[in-house]
Length: 204
Image (cartoon, rainbow, N blue to C red; front, side, top):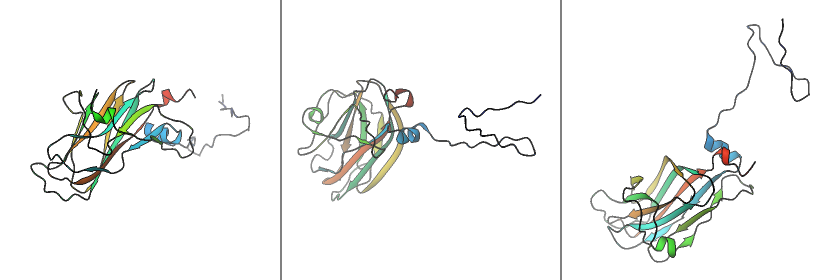
């Protein structure tokens, strides 16, 4: 008795089978983030350069992000870049911290909005996120959960990138702060890459 695999497309294709009775297939593997990029569900957030000139041991708020989507977002990467530092660092040197759910501070009430960029060029999908970056006067952040979810040293000049895999539910937020520890004045940028998982794919 033989078994026939029928071509469901109606074009009459047949499977290739070799002399050892092995059927030939082709598989393409990609992770959820890569799949999200191809389907317009992935984004980039970048403050671009921000000037920090004072407050050696002060926590300078440089980025605020809140998820307003009905579904979770996943942050997969965190990047930091510093340049033009002319100070003399002390202790462990400059530090970056990320806190969950800040509720106040000038990074929320008096900062500049960041454009969230879709990682698929030409996609019409947008993301319902509130994102602010520090510009002008240096910013503060308050009301956050006391233990940072991310804690990272940062060179006076250089770039850092790491995989992080954080998930924010609707209404959840985070804030990024920088402690120069003597590196100031310094130019710094930071940001995240992330996506909306496929089960939340804009109703497709």
